[in-house]
Length: 384
Image (cartoon, rainbow, N blue to C red; front, side, top):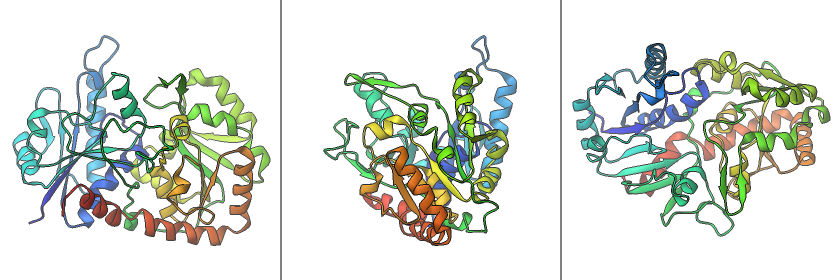
């Protein structure tokens, strides 16, 4: 009988976001590889499926529930998952079964503090806050907007620099352990690329707005992307983005297309976990431009998407957020801070793609293997 280890995450709220689902599934699959029985927990509220009148939309609710079921089945978690519904019912494990699993587990991993049910949280022996968006929850707390950390016992973050003197993300008086985004390497094997295109997946703005703090605005991906809009015109290669961008940002879309970026519908390229993986693995390399808040605070954030590209043997050309201080760069992973550095990095990858491909996979095996990452994290939070 495997020891249960619950992972609480937000999947049902973003139907059709295959990459978003993968970011959380890697934790569950990695725990299974370590010998645990992962329990995937999610929740829906009226606000999450609200229509224009503020009440729950039945079609949106059905879509969210079906998406959760599809994702759980894809990961082999259909019998060890639970979606908490707004009426107290569940999809999958019952509340009683869920409570028993949490009580029997050595800890509960609460990604971004998404699980808020006190009856369930109180049953956890060790409640671990897993920060995948460094800067946002810390500054929300500093500004009195929200406290996602309350009630948690241990704190880990993919922001490698939290607590360092040169990092602008406040620690909020908490002790943070640094982790890297885990990747279940068995599910991300190398395969010959269908093209040599540089690809990216992401949201132009995302679910959070900019934050005003310390006399400056800490912004989103849009605020960094504009600095590198000219990149495709400077490199003899195709650049393609599966970009979630609102039609209201039509001026930005016109600018991107004028600079030879190919914009692909993310609902097609990454509309399911398998489609997302296919999109990544059929690319030649990744172009990764970060949210402004990650860059401006020198957080050391590293993308879970980039980790998947590396595991697939795809070189990554990534904007430096401070991660270059804790990860080796130059082969497989190339960091840039300016447009000129991005151009040079792209040309370096194109000049010796096989070498960078091998280095990318080797780096993923060394630094992002889910078993290593999660095994180390559990030791850091006091779970043997």
